[in-house]
Length: 628
Image (cartoon, rainbow, N blue to C red; front, side):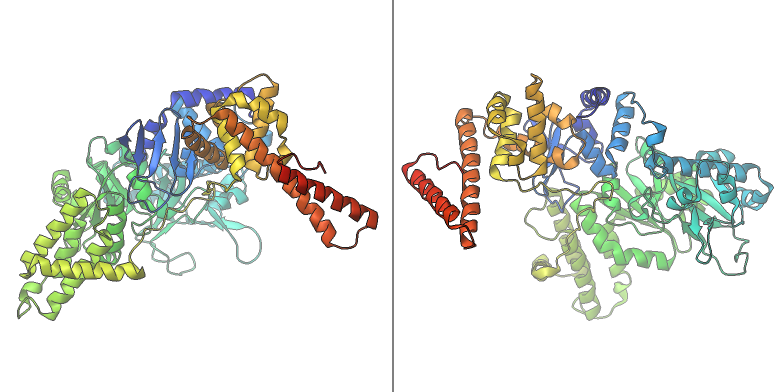
C-alpha cells in the first residue's frame, strides 16, 4: 500500500481528471449507451473495441486484454514509468507531489536525462547567439531569412567543431560522460578510453516531446563545411541516436508547437525538413511538423491520431522524394484509412521545397496550395495515369491494364474488404470505381469484378494487416493473466460484494493462491478487513501502481457486474467448496504418487491405503473425505 500522502495525492488526481477527457485527448470517442468506445491503439482494430467507463473511471479492450485507469492509460500511451505518469497527471490536475529524496535518485532516471538534454540545449543556444565561433552559423540563418525571434522560439543552437567542447563544459555540472552518452550527446571512443562530442561544427535543432521538453537533437553541417577536420566527407544532417527519451520513428519535429496551431488550422501539415517547418511557423503556418530522418509510417499514426484526423503530406519537388512516397503510399493509405484519418498529398513543383515556396510566394499562396492538396488515393491515380493520354490503342492496352491493376492494388490495401467498411469508406470506394470507369472507358462492373478478384488473392495470406503498435520498454504490453476460475471469482466477490470478505478471509489463506496478482488482491482485502475497513474498487485501483494488476481489477470489475443478479451466498459457498475439493484432490494425488514409488515402509503403506479407501468411501457417500 502506498504511503498515506501518496495515496491522498493519487485520490486527488483521480477525482480531478475524468478518464473520458484524458482518453478523448488521444483518440476520437463515441458515446455507446452509458459508456464510450474508440478504435483501440494497441491492436489491429477495424471497429471500435476500446471501452471507456466514466462511472468506474476505467478503460478496457477485451480483444487485446488491456485495461486500467487514468494512470495505466497514460503509461501505455506515452511509454512512461508510473512516477512519470503520476507527475504528468498531477501537473494537469494542479496537485503538488512530494519529491523523492535526492539520495534515492539514479543519474539515469528519466528526469535526470531530461535535465541533461535541457542543459545541452541551453549551451548550444548561447553559443549560437554570442560565441564568435558561431559567426558563420549566424550568417547562414540570416541568409535563409530566419528572424531572431524565430531562432529563440525554436531554441536553435550551434556546436563548435571540437571533439570535447560539450564534454569539457559538462565537467562543471552533475552530468557525467555516461549520462551524456545515454542521451546521445557524446559517443564512446572506438579505440582507447573516453568519449567525444557527437555533434561538431553543426547548427543544432532541438527536438522536443509533446510537452515541449528537449529529448534529442538534429545537427546540420554548414554549407561551407564540405568535410570534417580530417577531410572526410560528412553527412548533411545527423540526428541523435535512439535513446530512452527518443525514437525517431514515433516522434515529429515541432509537434509541441503544432498542436497549438491546430486550434486555428485544420489538420497537421507534415514536411521533410526542420528549416521547412521553422519557416512555415515564422510565416504563420503553425500546424506544420517534420519527420525525423525517416518516412511517415506506422509508429507515427497513434501520435498523429491523438491530435487530428487530417494530415497533409508535403512532397518536395524532386523526383527522388516523390518516388519514395509512392513506394510507401499503399501502406500509408491502409494505415490512415484503418484509423479514419484523411490523408492528403501536396506535390510541389519540380525543384521546389516548402521553405523556398513560402519565402518566395508568401503564406497565402502556400495556404492555397495546401487547400488544393488531393486525397492520397487521388494522388495515386493521377500519378499512375499520368501520360496515358498518349498511349495508342483502345482502353484494353497493356499500359492501361497495368495502371488499373496498380490502382486496384492500392484500393485493396486501403479497403481490404467490403464487409465491415464504414459508410464513408464505401462511398469513397464507389467514387473511385466511377472515376476509373470514366477515365479508362470501362464498365464499373468489369472493374469491380477485378477488384473482387484482387481481394480474394489478398485474402489467401497476402492481405495487408497493420502491425499492432509496439509497446515501449517502459510500458510493456501485459495481457490479462489466465487465472484459475475460483481466483477470478474471488476478486469479483471482493470488488462487488465486500460483505463476503469476512467469510472468505476466515476460510482461505494467501498460500492457497496460484497467481501472484490474485494473491496480492486477497492480501489487500485481508489487511483492510483486519483494520475494520471495506475496500472499494477505486481504492484497490489506487493501491497499486502495477499495470497488470490494474488490468486484472478492471476485467474482474466488468465481468463481476454481469453477475450482479446471482445468489452471492451460493457463489461464496461454491467457491469455498471448490477450493476445499482442490485441496483434497491435491492430497490424494500426492499420496498416490507415494504409493507408486513402491519403496515405502510396509506399515506406512498400509496406513496410506486405509486413508485413501476412507477417502473414496467418503466421496461416494457425499461426506467429507479423510483429513490427511
